[in-house]
Image (tube, rainbow, N blue to C red):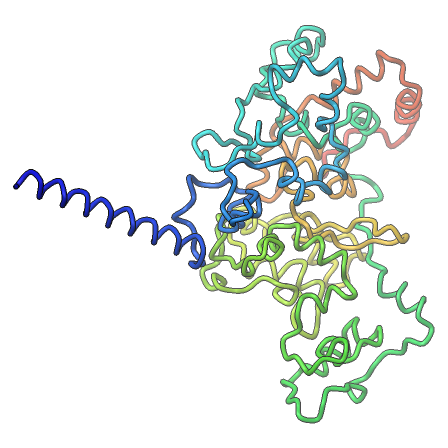
Length: 471
């Protein structure tokens, strides 16, 4: 009897435990907002914000159960536009060519998850890569054997700033490096593109007239906080004829004290699209509650922990001061060494001169100048790129849209190559040198590239051709 009782007790205990675990799992999966307990491991820095929306990456069966594998189409839901803009140098189609198919036996480069496997923190390197650092050797062993410039270089250095990237080499094409290799550290016409969207809007809308405080059309029963009318009437929205009802009563709806981000997108669709693709808005794009600084892995100010990120988090509610959004708004949340060093940097000094009217527009460098740069809008003007991922990692993404607006390419690459200089927010000169521009310049000479040789002739003949060390 004791043996039988023990066995029955064990079976009952096992059933109760299994049932309890199943109920707990079902509750977590189907009802609980916090699904952290279901994660098989820490996610990478690129995906941790959406890790609780499992279906953002994993497909689901008709019964709602997740599929463990992640398909390329799931990755491309978020990254297709980035790869298209990057002119992807290793697209899957490349490995369908007969001459390249043998390489698939070494690394299945047709599948995103071959290199980017989540939930493996011990094996995950920069940019979420989970293959060995020398994976380039799988296909490019002949490079170190045939190129004199690459003798002695380890394959783990291929992706070092200023060299190669698997997908995005726009800033590092060899000919681009060569044609810009003669530039001085600081370009004589250095400036940031100006934003002229308001002027173009007014010019194209002949009926538009600026609105004054007395033109505000808020309903009589709405109590307006002090200062709102004054801020609005001096803002770009009032100058463009945008009244209270346009934002607070969109499409004839009832009055909304809190303006929805979708309302902003009615006029600022490109900005919203960039925001949703970037780190500030990617949670909203995945159907999760908005990001707040308490969720970040980067150091953030404690007092900002629970601020919700949307349009007005940076732009304010009625004054929409773009200078505030470009600098002060960033500092109210970010608290990492690079951000803290900005106030003592040469970039900040230039920004202060511009803000004080002592320097021309576009001559200063704010946080947004580099991390939310002004890019061509396809209409002959410029807009702000609100997707930080477009120029954040790897950092050489910044070279063309940001650094080369003001700096020569060799100096810019060296600056991005110097980790300590980055920590100090680029105060001082690079203490290291990346030889990629030197190699590209010499290869252009050896190949007798006519465009480069003409640049070299003009550079040698110029009376201003002298060493420039001013950052």
